[in-house]
Amino acid sequence: MEQNDPSQAIQPAPALLRALDTGFTERRVATGSDGAQIAYRRGGSHGPVVVLLHGISSGAASWLPCASLLAADARVIAWDAPGYGNSQALQTAAPTAADYARSLAGLLRALDVRPDVIVGHSLGALMAAAYVAQAGPAQLPGQLLLLSPAQGYGGPGKADKAKEVARQRLDALAAVGVEGLAERGPGRLLSAAADADAQAWVRWNMRRLDPDGYRQAVAMLCADDIGAYLARRNPGVSVRVGCGALDIVTPPPGCAALAERFALPFELVPDAGHACYVEQAGSVARWIRSALA
Image 1 (cartoon, rainbow, N blue to C red):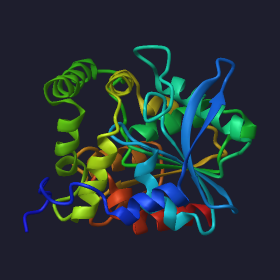
Image 2 (tube, rainbow, N blue to C red; image 1 turned 180 degrees about the vertical axis):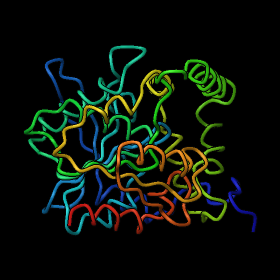
Image 3 (cartoon, rainbow, N blue to C red; image 1 turned 135 degrees about the horizontal axis):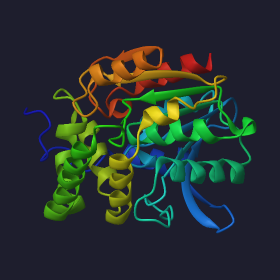
Image 4 (cartoon, rainbow, N blue to C red; image 1 turned 120 degrees about the vertical axis):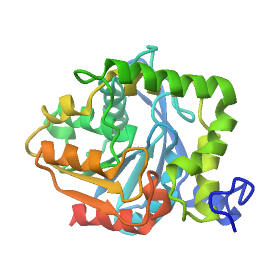
């Protein structure tokens, strides 16, 4: 059987979709003075609060396999970032990570929760770092986990690379649309050994992308810099970096270099590509639990 074959497992398993509707249901809440709607999913009924932030090609639902493992002993909240799913988009064509972080703060205030752990995957890691850099003491988590972090292209000397990345991503969106991006997704986001169910789950979540929300996220990726936020992080927040060992989007050497730059612990997720929390949900759930411990 050919690996990462888009003809296989076109739809996720029915049991997975049933679990999404019963144990990780979508809710919406108005946040901020403008009443912007944010959609989120919630699992678990007791224990510490774990907040999960998805990346540029995904959404809250993608966390289901990992969140289901955490929900036995934690309250799990996964948002659809502004411009994703049923979350209202930000009111600017070129937002910063700080703009997304303010929306996250509004969501957590509306839910009246203080996170114990925030996990940011890929572009979500950039948003999470911005949140920790600017949140008040009452909203800071004890732990920040950066999983296969997107570091952004807004740092010094990266202008040409930022333009190239923006062009490539927007040209691809224009050429093949969301459906085409979803068909390509597993080959880039998962390892060659990923099973058909993981491939189907990546495609299903990518098909839910909103083109305008995706364009906003591309603008943020290409103009912002995770290092600027980590340099301003509250010293009371413990930060750790992880990465799929087979990640080709944010490869391990770059993630390890970020960890070394800020003297942070670094850990690989074995046998996993970029969407490691989908491909190796058990390993990532154990990593998150170790932060809670």
